Image (cartoon, rainbow, N blue to C red; front, side, top):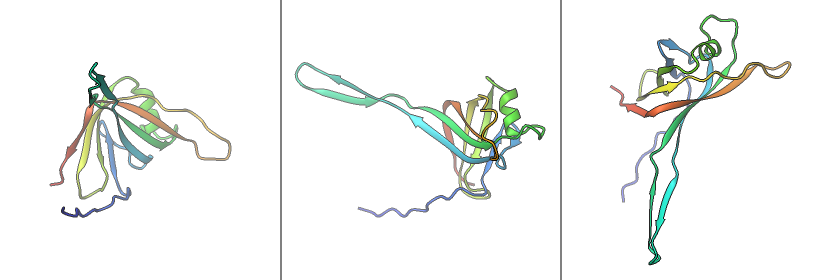
Length: 136
């Protein structure tokens, strides 16, 4: 058995492009998440077969609400509801791989608690799955 080395990832100095605009300054978390379920068939001879369904993916963004800045992420999500937009997420700016995906835009929450930054989390559906683009 070969021991595989690991380089843990700390998210900082990322890039996040939605459409043609960069939103890395608006977010504090970017997460692509797959979801798949097990499918099992059982025969009458007490035999079973298990497989998994094709995963569906979502992109979750945690962000600071900004209703003042033109083209802020809050405003972009609100204005582009239902449209499909290209996303590029590079976990390490300047090196390493990136991930691309086509997402369906959903607006996020408006407002929040008194005496606190208004933040929100939005989950965008991904058409297909993210594509891993190796570093050059």
